[in-house]
Amino acid sequence: MAASPHPRHPPPSSTPKPPGSKGARWPLPIRVYERVLRALAPLLMGGARGGRSPEEREGSKLIRGIQGRCRDRDRFSSWAEEGRDPERPLAWIHAPSVGEGLQAKAVLEALRTRRPDLQFAYTHFSPSAEALARRMPADVSGYLPWDTRPAAMAALDALQPDLLLFTKTEVWPVLALLAAERGIPVALVAATLPRAAGRRGLLGRAFLTPAFRALTRVMAISPEDGARFTELGVDPTRVLVTGDPGMDSAWERAQAADPGAPYLAPLHGSSRPTLVAGSTWGADEAVLLPALGKVREMVGDLRLVIAPHEPDEAHLAPLEQALQAGGWRIRRLGEVERRGDAQDVDAVVVDRVGVLAHLYSVGQAAYVGGGFHAAGLHSVLEPAASGLPVVFGPRFANSLAAEELKSEGGGVSVEGEVELARVLLSWLGRGGDGEAVGARARSYLLRHRGAAARTVDALLPLLP
Image (tube, rainbow, N blue to C red):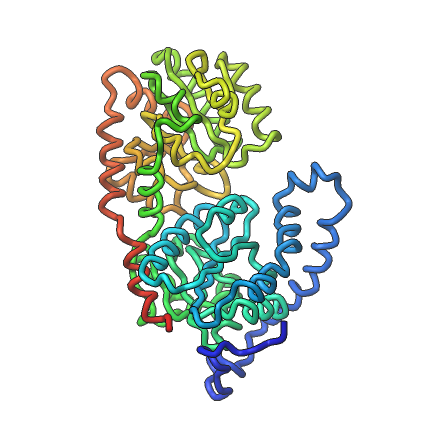
């Protein structure tokens, strides 16, 4: 599709020269990054098409992501010809993976309520978000194009967005700068910048500062996060503290849990004390399973519902072997659903994605994975929304919610299996205080709701 300016965003003059302005020369690190990526993209696409069996290609997230970009390369152009209404403004929302996608979904839904005339495009980076993308209430969804001039310009030409939104941490420099050159407002919602973030280092600053300077709005989850964005070149007048839209999303998903759903009903029909372990990795399970062995000595009817972060066969099979070796009677969630009964099951292994938020409704306590994993902690908001006490590993510096939940007495961080067993026994054993801790977790989440509405209030002035 030939390049054409959006009628509401004509090409700016070449007079202004800050990064993101028409005619500005991009800094050397950005130019090097773009040229390297442009050279690598065809090689990556070629490698994803061959050299491995179909099973290996399906199991590799890297290859799945590359294949997804190949598959979606012309999606926006095709949709633009059939579905783009030039009389309606369009907001393009990007979120890298599932957690950020849920934050983006809360903003999208609130924005659609306030501006029903809008059209929406949603993009993601990780293959983990493919299922969420299919459920996203957007007019068109797909993988983010390569962050190169040709790919980004083609997408901008096709979509003709009036607003470009990035979520949480991920700002792609070439796309952001090209959008800013066209006069399209570029914003970061649920903006997060932890103290130890690599983006605050010299290399991160070199690549990202120009893109951050091009941002029209930064809607931070906390005053501390907002202040750190100004260190990366964001004008302080463009930073607003609106909170975490993930709070709204988590609450809505918890409220939507249906106890009569086929996969939930067999688990609700029991009074057994239940731990729901969500988004676990091997490093979590190496601590969790021995700890649960100790807890079972005191809580003999303990039940476990465990949902690995990546529920593929490569993870499920060894997990099931470890549980069987520990004396657990196990079934996968799909089998529990088909049988309609879980009376003889001690451990339910979740073999799908998209149901974890509702599974927390069957528990009395929650373990959230990632805290013993290099990538960091997953979301603690879903179990908090269900009123569960939350325990997690020591690596939670990337999660403000976990830090605050811990300080308010709704969650606990542990260093190893002995401490984990002690905490779980204090919650699940006879006379435990898990219910009181869970009430504090839910209270924390309820006090922080409303971020999606505040975010939309800040975005509306940017739209035509």
